[in-house]
Image (cartoon, rainbow, N blue to C red; front, side):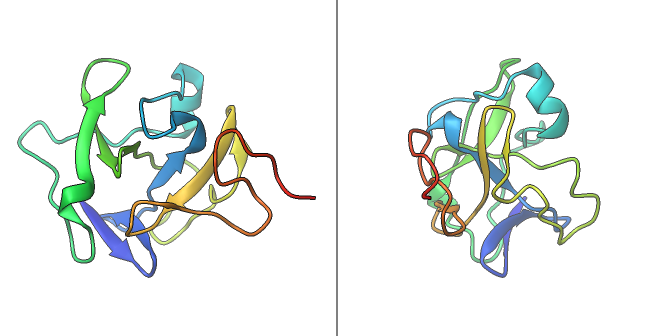
Length: 128
């Protein structure tokens, strides 16, 4: 399911995986409208998510999603893809402030890949 591509996690198909700062490593805080652009990564119905090369299996888990279906987490962050990433290898959602917070790519250690000058926590504001 999850693999490392360069320095960020991607799906088996090569699509970027994102975290949403307002989730605060606790729960999905992306509402119905938000989820249209930022689909959650759900556990497969036929088994658990498998860690690909470079992914720390001990950081993979799940949390109940808005419908009760298990959502894949990495270092307690619910994982999302982005609908504007229309090809593998794209990361057009990186660092955007959309749908109530910032979106970042996920690094292999489970932390957000935060560009310089952008907040690294949900309560932080960008530097000026």
